[in-house]
Image 1 (tube, rainbow, N blue to C red):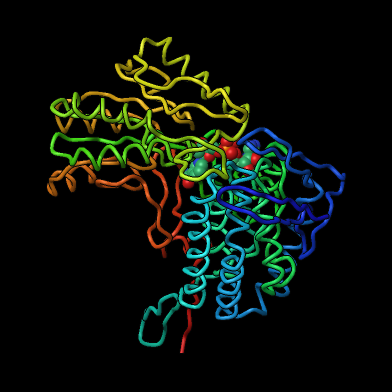
Image 2: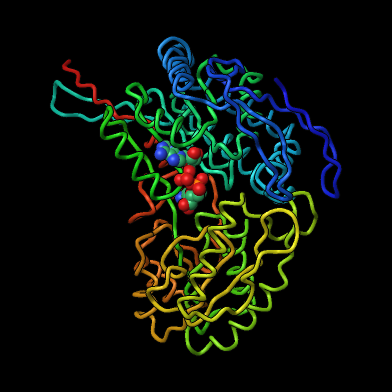
Length: 494
Ligand code: NAD
């Protein structure tokens, strides 16, 4: 079945169409049990459509199809340059439908259409092109071991890779894993979030149009507890690339360990700090901190939500932050000039409001926000707390909503101690005009990425990933190719 939907709005007008089945072995099919899930528009709570919901049998079918493709077509008969050409072709097809992809993210995930078009889907296209270029360039080494012997290494694909992604940036997070996995010759079974599968299904229809062999890429939308677990525990899945919460990452590692010791990369949550020193450019720092905190209403793994401000600048910067936070325009996925949109669901709304209550209960000062907006959909006003006790949950736990905390510090070493006092380590931000200080502080930040005078802006060319309980393994950049290949050493006597 194909879902069609006409949108007429300030930013986009057109008719969207997406197949609603599971994508297995190059075809859209119903789930074996005929189960479906209803999708809703987070901007107003309205019903969008039903899509098929994968159960355990469907996961088996998708893995079978991926394994067949890996052994008989995609993994054996398609050369590395041909893989590159197919990925480049896929990028071209996405580009031709860029508005539709952006509109689907707006409809299904509440992402602002203009942001999706101007950032996320452009990133999808450039990530596909970037890894299309790598497909025939990931070579091993020749190693001379003795006069009559040498060895060489080959980067070989792993096999069937399961990719499990969340709902906050549905397509780009999937493509960050899909593109290097396919470029290096693996077959993919993608499990998008049960809340936001529409862009993955649209991508699947283009994978077919681009000419990939059936089974090289499969999409099985389903619940984590059923489809996600079946994929993670599957004996013939050789790797899981997971993006999501730390709790689920821990569970996936456990399932991987208990089943076939499949490889795992984990891109998990964060509670990322931003340290603002007295010598920062205040105006630019305020703008970047706000983007870092409230982009996607804080539903952003790299969100910089712990703001440490040096004593000398605190009284200047904090009122500016509060004022700017109050002026952030919120709106639906299709409104223009919107800085932040809705939370994804009622569950997420309740969770965020719960944290706000906990913050008040812990004795923190509410500087701004703290309320749900009086309109349909799941909107929470950008919220800032000051005077936060060190053990308060709003300072320690990932909220994944538009809630930030502001904390005063005195010395550089105190700032580093506070910033590093977290179980997470995804990114860290530093605002200063001193190059010395920027280099010193970024070196000591416990984080996979550090950003100086800018909020976490991710680029396909640069590796990204966490330390501590933010996970391990790297996405993006050349480094990601190693995450999808195993090294074979071949020894030759001549
Ligand atoms: P989540 O962990 O609940 O779900 C993520 C995915 O895992 C979904 O597809 C879900 O269906 C699946 N899943 C859930 N339980 C599972 C299980 N037991 N076995 C297998 N799969 C299962 O996360 P979410 O609520 O969808 O997304 C928010 C989280 O994702 C936040 O913690 C955020 O920080 C994190 N995230 C991290 C990054 C990153 O790059 N580090 C990027 C985006 C989001």
